[in-house]
Length: 365
Image (cartoon, rainbow, N blue to C red; front, side, top):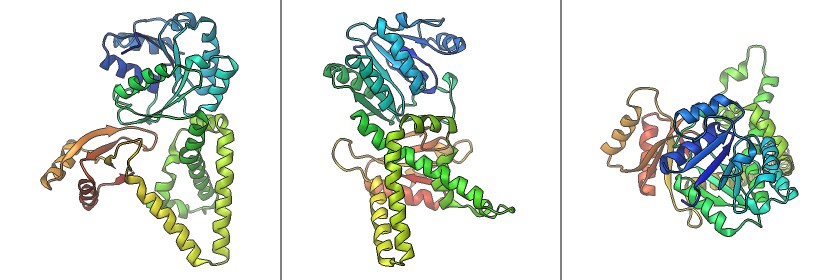
């Protein structure tokens, strides 16, 4: 590994998980961290994850080869500016924020483009803080990198290789494309979910009839409304331009669908719904290109001892071979689920049918 000293500003769930993973993979690497709480630093030191057992100033952190900014976006910008007077040639600064435009704007404003590669590990958990960090949290998670135009290409390659060594799946994107894409596939869907839940709350009667009969479809589409309200407030404010752009397009789409219903254009509605179904069904089939083909399915675990063994035995007894297996925590699911990777599409389809037959809840991609 080309990075010998790595610094962390913020050591919560994501920062702590990256630090723990790097220490597991590279025992000789020297990791340093500072945090809003001394107890976080002392806990990481006690576990031999980092070298220091006290809070560090920005000048000390700036002496590292690679620096992870692992606090909320606006705080990351404050730390970026605090690092500027001390940053050394060749040092790389990256972040883990879920929106990129604000911090890239700050990087440009501070003339620090040669030092910065934005990062977004698309993983997480319902838990927070260093105590919940895991040295396997990034495994099989998408990790998007948004390098500036001025950062040396070899530094992008070095950071990409480091991320991939943690078994994450890297994508290199322009930061504006990142924010537009995440606004479309993550941010606006969360806003829609929150609005649907609040609409039902407002329309429900005193007997809570709607809440009582809310079943699979409604719960599936609004499950993400159980995410952290504070986090989504911050995301909406930091990615407002892209969110508003996509929201306007979604509202236009709703208005067109409303017109079809008003005019009772059944065939138009059928075509529209069929188009959506066909596209959604294609999500579980990875095509050739940037990402290799993966045959995977996610399964809710029954809360009992030996739950993983039961599933593995069930598949094995039906001559279905598992290529990879593991428990996944990320923002897409409320709790941990079991990720199963099969060798081919035939094994995938047989697994899905078999698990559904035995009443397991399946999430397909």
